[in-house]
Amino acid sequence: MKWWLLSITLFTSAAFAFDTPYTMRSPRGLLMGDAFTAVNDDEFTLFYNPAALARHKRDFTLNPVNPQFHGTNILNDMDRFKDFPDEPVGASKVLMDYPAHASGGIAPGFKLFNIGVTFLANESYDVLLRNRAHPMLDLDLRSDRGVMMGIGIPIGPGRLSRKNSQGSQTSLGISAKYLERTGVRDTLALAGPVVVDSLGKDELEKVLKTLGRVKGVGYGFDAGLEHVTRSGNSQFVASLAALDITGTNFKEQSHPDNLQVADIRDQINFGLAAGQDFKIFHYILSADVRALNEEMDFGKRLRFGAEVGVPGLSLMAGMNSGYYSYGATVDMAFMKVTAGFYDMELGSKYKQIKSRRFVLYLSLFDFSFDA
Image 1 (tube, rainbow, N blue to C red):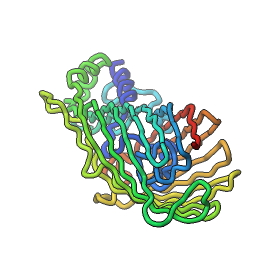
Image 2 (spheres, one colour):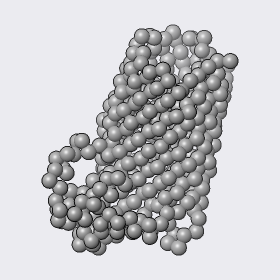
Image 3 (cartoon, helix red, strand yellow):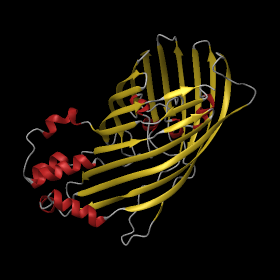
Image 4 (cartoon, rainbow, N blue to C red):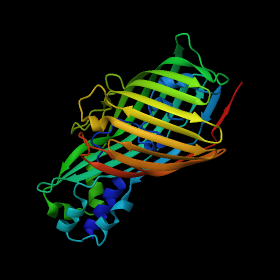
C-alpha cells in the first residue's frame, strides 16, 4: 500500500526534465514538433523570437486568459501499470527510469503595434527514479512568476503591412524578462527498496518539506532577426533567435544545504517556415535547428512541423528530436481550445530519455482591433 501511495506521489509530481531550457512553450508549437521559431504568430511570440513582433498584423491584440496543462501520457503505457505490484522490488521495476511530468501555467499579455508584453505564472513538477543498484530520485520542482517585454523593429528599405500582400521585410527584435523562480533541483539518494518501501505519502511529503525550497531571482535578455517575404497568399519566413543571452541565472537566497533552482542556459535557434492562406484553407510547413551554440547530436537539434486548417479548425503534426506530435485547435470566436499529444527528449543525447506527454490549452476572450 505504501508503494502505491508513493507511485501516486510520483505521477502527480512528474519527471525530472534533464535537458529542458525553456520557461514556457506554445501549445500549438509543441504539437507542430516545436518547429515554431519562424512561425511564431500566436500569443507566445516572446518565448521564441521578439523580432516577430514587427509583423504583428493589428494595432492592438489582447490575450487575457490562456491556461495550459501538461502531464505524462500514460495511455500508451497502460500495460506497464496493469496489476501494479505491492512489493517494493516489483514496484521499483515498474517505476524505474520512467519519467513523469505535470505542469500548468498561464501567460496573459498584449501586443501594441510592434511592442509585446507577457506576464507568466507556471508550476512544473518533474521526478525520475533511476539507478537500479543504488536508487536515486531526481527532483526538479519549479514555480515561476515573471514578466517579459519586447519590441520588433523593421530595418532596411522593405516594409510589410496588413494591406500589402507583396514585398519583404527584415526585422530586429529585443526583449527583456524578469523571473522569480521558487523550487529545488536536487537528487535524493535512496539506500534501497526497503527504504523506499518505508516511505508512505505522508513521509515523502515530510522529506520534501525537510528538503525545502529556495527562491531565486533572475534577469534575462533575448534578441533576434527575422526576414519575411510575401507574394499573394504565400509567405516565407527565416528566423534567427538568441534566447537568454549568456544565460539567465537565478540568484538564490541563502540556504543551509546550498539548494539551487534550475538556471536557463543560453540558446541560439534558427527556423524556416513557408505557407499559403487561401482564406477557406491554409497550410504551414516549418523546420527548426536548435542550440547552434552547443555541442549535441545533430538529430536532437532538428524539429519539423506542419499545420493545415479551415476557418475554425486546424490540425497540427510534427517531429521533435525524432519523436512525433499531433493535435488540433478549435477556434470559436472568443474561445480557442488546443489539445494533443507530444513526445520530447529529456536527455542530453538523441533518443536517450523519451517523455510522452499531453497538452490541453484554453484561450478565452482574445480580441484585436485597429485604431
